[in-house]
Length: 432
Image 1: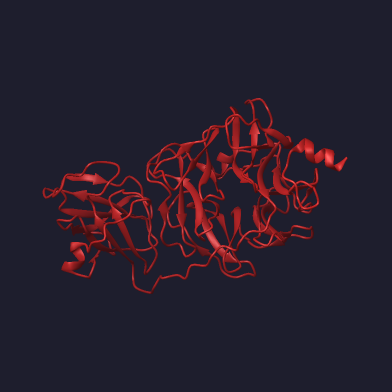
Image 2: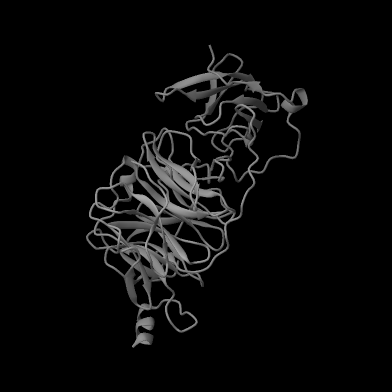
């Protein structure tokens, strides 16, 4: 009978001829957008369950609600967000996969959600604050958390990449809050950058595949980033609606929450990533967030290069390198740097000269929103960033050009600004 269940489900077989196990969230209602407005994603409750050998069991039955399962690299423990009692704030808990009492890892009046294991026995998660959900990192054994995001908005982690960086989603500043994009940041809060610089449709619920590609939800379907393409590629899958994230099993098959029509319930379905493959129901209804149970490498640790120097040093190699617009050569004379005040209003920090090769070097405040504006000799705006970014105290960052994108490699030349001076133009306070 057990073998019959395996064949019907069509799951990968383990060493004993049994289906591979996975975690998932069961919930009568799931509103993934609710976190963007401080709402409840699971207004009717939720429960993390373990599916194995055709049977599901609840992972943390002592909690009133649980969701957002993330497996430890050794596949022995699970991070979840959960409520001890209905109506209480969501907190982060750690639970043995084999079963046992959950251990509370966070506390406070705001919700803590979307946890993931990081290097050095630490974990990342999002904490609800007056500025929105902000990403933090903290030791599993207890200790003060450190903040990784430094702007108003909702920042929600999607995972830890194999290179150790935090993958997260947030609304791109200047566009409606429902339109998100994918970003990465190191575990000291430095090096924040968008995964792709095209800022296209809404992107959320991303996961890294074995190939290094990212698979993510956009609209009701799925798309991917590959290393060879600067933009996204749509994934040709059976028609229907998908609720990310996607889980990849050995052999390349996927698990995802899927429903054929808007009136249907979501099931965790198995399918091959091609249009001709039909989703096969595995567990449901009302099932989401599949996570394979398997051992994987511990994320690598990146030693922090942050120092105690005031502010951050930012070097642009060539403002004329741009993927969004053609900037005429020799047209840029200065760069104006902007930040925000406590009320979210834009504040000019000052201006710095731009060299003939398009390079400039400035020192800006840290842990504060920043953006650049290029000016001609008459002070007229040539190009301006629509979004904001931040830099950490003591961070030294280099960008290739003006909105050039992280996939663009720089020319192997010394920028003229560094031939003229190695001291950045200070802009640590707003301009008079």
